[in-house]
Length: 393
Image 1 (cartoon, rainbow, N blue to C red):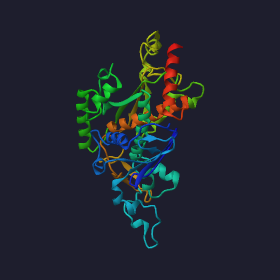
Image 2 (cartoon, rainbow, N blue to C red):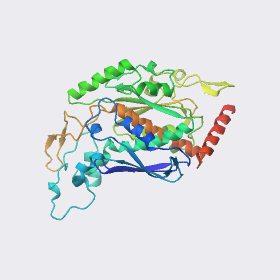
Image 3 (cartoon, rainbow, N blue to C red):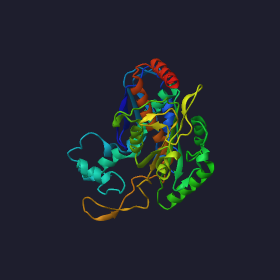
Image 4 (cartoon, rainbow, N blue to C red):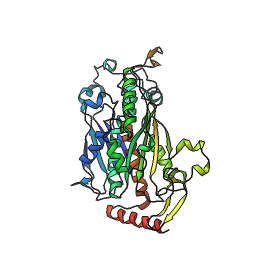
């Protein structure tokens, strides 16, 4: 499977075309809109989340609620476009219009953003040409894509959830999710302001976010994604670019502001002995091959082990601050304090939703690569046969 996205932050719409979905997969706009709403939630979001509510329109590839096997086109309209038509319009400017008279041109790059380097790369003197596409607004349509992937995974008995484990130095107790299923974790975090499973830690996270906002600053954190129901053997060890953990890591780091990723025990493995890291293999007639622990996060040699996949990503504090950092005007070369385009004091809860959906896409894509089925019923049969095979191996 593959997809492309198009659109700018303040353009008329965000668009994606998904290719390679099996036929007969149930898909509705309502299902996707539920996930888009989650992305706009979470304590610490900025004003734009109140300006417009993201909803999707399915333009092709779905008929009467199910996929056809043809490309699926999705569109999310930007309601605020009416205020940006002259600034972001696609048509050439009239001859009597001076481009410099159009508001919102930007010559002052913000530290931590793509502004300056993007301007250098594409030769833009108006840095709005960079920030409009590099904006995290693009993740809206990637959540829509991931929602479709999650629908496919659900049909195959594979479930996924994300939750926040840390914000601004406040760390959730790992016991808050220990022994809980994906469904149980989701029931907890969907009622929480920070999408955190530890209620006590969540209250402290809210305080930390509010303190950062009051100080004109921002804070980052860590999100965790858990995937249950995958059989062993998805992915491959034979080529570097077919290793599933490599693909999942790339997906996590493709999210705006994400700077680190780990699986299972992650970086803690550096402080442990081998006997405290690797997962012992056990077998039973009822379950087949399993592990006595899941310290490696459900992946060995670039392949799934059959244990839950556990992957975490770290998000840096958002660089657009109401307490601006120093930069340099590219026209005058004079120093200045960076301007504010818009700002969330913390977007970690929302980013956890994005993480869930980009990981869902990579998992769904790996499943489709493994089984190569064009029809959902056949895909289910192949997956069931594979599970039985690995159990009896």
